[in-house]
Image (cartoon, rainbow, N blue to C red; front, side, top):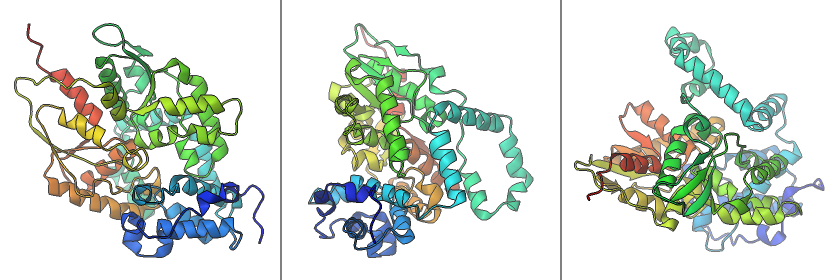
Length: 441
């Protein structure tokens, strides 16, 4: 059976498809394989399916498409692979193949993807509008009233579960907390950087964006934070919508031309992993190709950038509050961007902090973009495993550098009735700067 001519997998350089040696080194690192012990649920098994389709030995089926969406996309297999297989690229091509084939199409699915991917995340003004409505619903006490009324018991179990996961929208978006220009503190700026405010980050963790701007300014950076920003496109690329991902990348480059900055800063691991690969998305676009290469070169995760420029350790206050902190590594930070030492260096620099290593710190928490919404059973198992390990550290604070992980771990902590604080590392650093002792003399 012939594939459509626009087959994303057949369009790949064939050497990428056949690079897997089938050695099995990835198997112990794959969360889905660890649970099911089924070969098809492993990176090796999935790559075998992709190669069979690229070779036209099997057609694209619903089973293949569902398997590609059962994958977390955590990229732990990339870290483990001795052959350097580009599983991230294969993964995105495979999901694009699934979407191009139409084997998963249904009116309900098309409506949901249209609303979420194209309408909601295609224009952040619409996302902010939805966020404002949800914020009002929560601040007026309507959400709590509905939960107490018992009306939710009338809903199907899955909808009740989704409602319980509704995040709290903060009172202010980033543009209300961070000016378009944040001057460097203590004299002339040593660096000029752009700060990306994100999508969900802007609504749910705008305080992290404020903290990031403050920390950058404290470390000699003039910070440019446009009030109107666009989605980076990672959600689209990871869900087979390449054309939209490419358009979002073009809009991002137009908004923040990379030639004008020493660095483009992101504090969201999932976004950062995607943002560093615009040159792959736009490699065949003659108008954007060179700028995309420069863009990739300038993008920095906040932890990466602070260590690169030699951030200033906070001065110890007279009575530093002792904190036992453990660190969960966001998959797209440790596996996607190979950033592991830098967040730890920041945490260890904070007076009063004792960093206790988390067992399986690089194991996925189950968030994985929107995975916890579409694959709740597997996501739930991974979350329980993560919280179990957190409890062994006896930490009072869990630090992690991605909004999805923050929400997921917060959800797990809340379900257990625990009093743990779950926070971004840059917030702990910003708080330490604010309470530090004054310099002598």
